[in-house]
Image 1: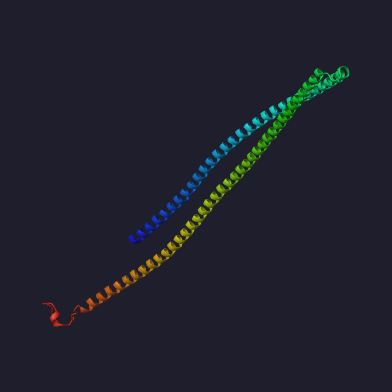
Image 2: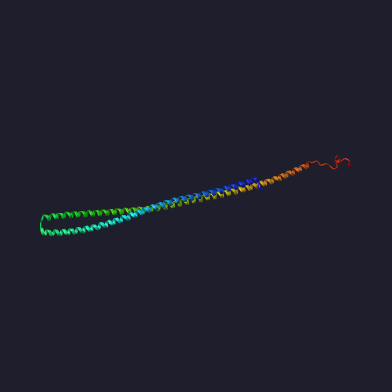
Amino acid sequence: MLSPWEDRTRELEQQLAQKWEQHEALLVRDKDSDILVARRLHEEVLSRVQKDAERVLEVHRREDHLRHDGLMSSLREELRNLKRNHQEEILLSVQEALRDLSFRESVNVACGNCPILEREKQDLREALWERERSLEEEVQRRQRMERVWEEEHRRLRERETVRELQESILTEQKRHANEEVLRQVEEARSCLEKEKLQLRDQEATLFRERAVQDLTLSRAYAELERQRVQLQVEQRAVELQQDTSEEEQCPVRDIWDPDSVPDGVSV
């Protein structure tokens, strides 16, 4: 049967071990919960950002394609019309010039230096100059349209390059963000492993201290038991000594002593 002091010691040891296990479980649960919450929040934010960026890029891509296709089609159609009209006008101008030249030669042959003929020739020259001027303006307008088309095509190419660069930057940012999340998770896991190792070390230290304490208590119990046995032996020796002393102090009468003979008995 254990003494009250032993019962109290064992009860304290059990309470200490239970509190330590509860503390370790709470630490592990809190760390796991924090890591899961942080990872879930980061994944949600990253998913929203990725979806928004992909949506914006898709809208820009469609707008650029539509704008590019529509502008290219209209420019090509206008250039075809201008080229066709220009060719027709050149052909008509050449035909008119040939007719005028043929008519002028025939008139020169018939009329010589007639004032009316000279006036007609001057009118024809002015009409020819006006036609040349309009043709030159048309050529310049066509060249301007070509420059506008080239400029718009260059801008579209630049926007396409910028879009590709933005997509590559976004992809790189996603990769870095994923690497950062993995790094944070790895750091959290490493910290958790370190804390677990520290808890195990502390638990081992506690077990060693408890083993030392148990050994010390066992030795103390053995010493107390030895002292108790020795005390019992000493008490028994003292009792025996006291009994011996009492026997020695008790008076012993001589059976031949006349005073010790009862009355009526003859010696």
